Length: 434
Ligand SMILES: *[C@@H]1O[C@H](CO)[C@@H](O)[C@H](O)[C@H]1NC(C)=O
Ligand SMILES: *[C@@H]1O[C@H](CO)[C@@H](O)[C@H](O)[C@H]1NC(C)=O
Ligand SMILES: *[C@@H]1O[C@H](CO)[C@@H](O)[C@H](O)[C@H]1NC(C)=O
Ligand SMILES: *[C@@H]1O[C@H](CO)[C@@H](O)[C@H](O)[C@H]1NC(C)=O
Ligand SMILES: [Fe+2]
Image (cartoon, rainbow, N blue to C red):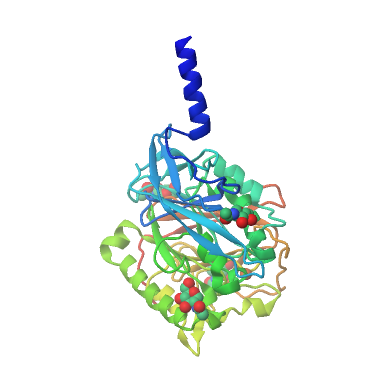
């Protein structure tokens, strides 16, 4: 009886006053975490967790662990105000989980004393360079008509990917309807982006208010507002660039120069003998292609990032100088792969086009699905065009080891059938010479 009264008193005390533990100091009506997504931090065993609440939760916490959530790390939030007429605001929270155990599956939830997310998991990749990296790669996925989304969710939840690369153009657009479309899109991708590091680059659809929805919602490594950065994963050095700095020059011509100088330095470092020996593959992704054979010629002549403005700061010579193995683009709502290519000329390998190719291989994969449908091709493509499809879909990528990488194109119009696949085989990775 005494025990009963005691537990009754304690129960009331707990319910009323939250005696034990941090107590909410105000009635928070919009403190439920949403739009949860993760990314790699400065190294592959640092995982950055990002989410939104519409009210200030005063704290940003992630509880996590191996099997059970017995650890906790705190982070911070920033107030993001959209540039639209309603000036809608939200708190974007970031927590960095550092020095996690390699090759280990963690569970986590994110939130505060005012409310927690459901529980998710992620897997920290293996240590070192010698393991097969599996990626999903695509661009141009919108809030409406996101044809590939259910396929991607299915594969992500069955642990088929170590990383996802979204090569620009999100939501259509993240700022639309005072950024409500951005919120909805971030909720849509949560089932995959909360589990698998979702690495991004900006596209033209992100340009509003100086890319502010993009820069605030995605937390990529490095200091440059997620516009350009690189990260290492297994045998690959991935580099994300903004092709948009060449087109939205009103936000600052200096961004072209900053990115160019940064890229040159980054690629030079990746080419230091000890680095290239460990991580031989260099793959760059950016939004607008240097080459494509869509019927919309204006869109395909995205020459500024390739040749530069007035002949300076063009990026294609850097691809040769630093032996970039493959470059992945989107923007065209289609899939296209090229033969090894430089300055409009094909440089096949001698024992097969992709066996020790003598120039970078380009892939355009922008058909994940959006309200602008897919793009048709012109009827007589240039000699560099190797395969084309205007169906909806996405690309799967596996870096098997130091000599072999594999790409394949999933066609969702054909219920997930693989319509194209190819290997790039290289005995040596170094500068290309013409
Ligand atoms: C909480 O969020 C709602 C919805 O965005 C907003 O209308 C309200 O002003 C916010 N309250 C506070 C105290 O921030
Ligand atoms: C746009 O944002 C970038 C970085 O996010 C910044 O360097 C640049 O100065 C900004 N431009 C303007 C015009 O505000
Ligand atoms: C490159 O190789 C492919 C595949 O073997 C071939 O179809 C194409 O004609 C070659 N191009 C050149 C310019 O050698
Ligand atoms: C690299 O991977 C390819 C494809 O799986 C395989 O054929 C080759 O033997 C591997 N090479 C090494 C050195 O393991
Ligand atoms: Fe685009």
